[in-house]
Image 1 (tube, rainbow, N blue to C red):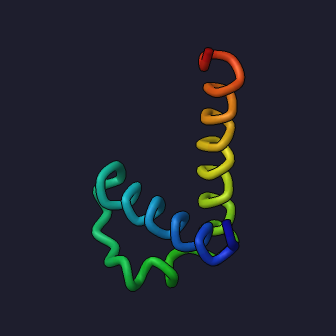
Image 2 (cartoon, helix red, strand yellow):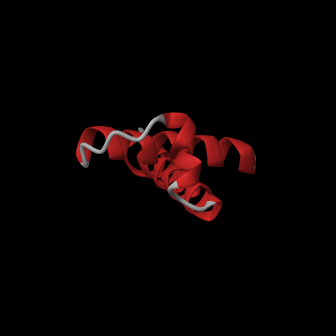
Length: 64
């Protein structure tokens, strides 16, 4: 996974959080003006790390 993919995923996750959880109407194209780039990278990498950890945990312990 590249940093660009992590940034895009983080941007989508933050946009969805603002739209559906916080109920704040921020257009997707303007999300860059509300948050710095490192937040997108961090969110995308953390999400991918958690997903990878769950997958590895599943195959290590529950897959027989």
